Amino acid sequence: MPASAAAVLDALGDATRRSILERLLDGPSAVGVLAGQLPVSRPAVSQHLRVLKEAELVLESVAGTRHLYRINPAGFEAVRGYFDQFWATTLHNFAALAHVEAARPPVHLPSEQET
Amino acid sequence: MGTQPTGEVVVRRTVQVPIPPERAFALFTDRMTEFWPPDHSIGSSPIARIVVEPVVGGRWFERGVDGSECEWGQVARWNPPGELVLLWQLGADWTFDPTLRTEVEVDFTPDGAGGTLLELRHRHLERYGEQAETLRGIFDSPGGWNGILAAFVDRARQTAD
Image 1 (cartoon, rainbow over the protein chains, first blue to last red):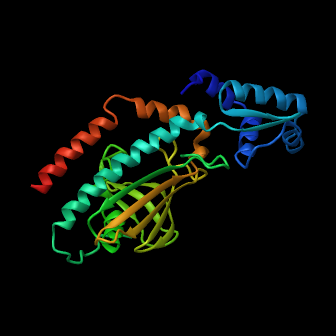
Image 2 (cartoon, one colour; image 1 turned 60 degrees about the horizontal axis):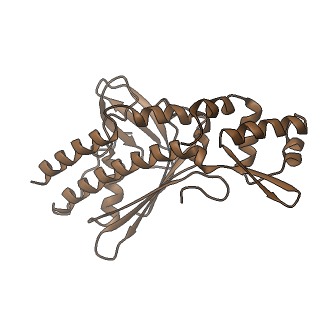
Image 3 (cartoon, helix red, strand yellow; image 1 turned 90 degrees about the vertical axis):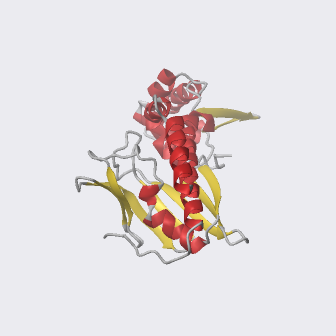
């Protein structure tokens, strides 16, 4: 994870910045558009975006005079890595159990489901 | 891979198993206790059973050996033998959070040789945004994933003998 943990935590510790991130989850957006959706001024949105960029949670792209901001997937790599490992282990376990099952005659097992 | 254009963060995993979809679906849902990493529990006592109620809206929970129950989420889609969707509502600190809704989609497809291709997608992980660092701590903790995997492989070998 390239951004420091402290920078990420600081960036996410602000409700307005979390609101900005939530909006960017729907797709890239511009400062003016974000300011129109939030109860804060355009310069304030710019400042928040700067903090999010420094935490590597947001990327900025420039096309002519147009600046677009979007979610930086690398900022979520820790979460993704965690679940990737979790499911790798769990499905490995599942496959091993299935191999044991396959060696048995295919009887219909009575359900142990309790409701 | 892993992130959609919309910013959705997804984990995808596939595994092939030598039993047909009907049996794979039943094994996955009815006997989850037998393949779930045992230290991934949120209850105050060890897991006696992991229950997936076989109906849309059903509960997904663990029951401890002392009889206590802890919610994990619920069944969002139940279409045996092909499709299962569970809502995973555990926070990064392994407590139930009803406001958190991540989705575990599992598809069971015949592999053409009598077995099943299981495709799992854990979707909307971006909803963990604020908890990322907590998760990192769990992932990096001593005695984590490698130990679990090694213990399992040993047990699976013994079972197969």
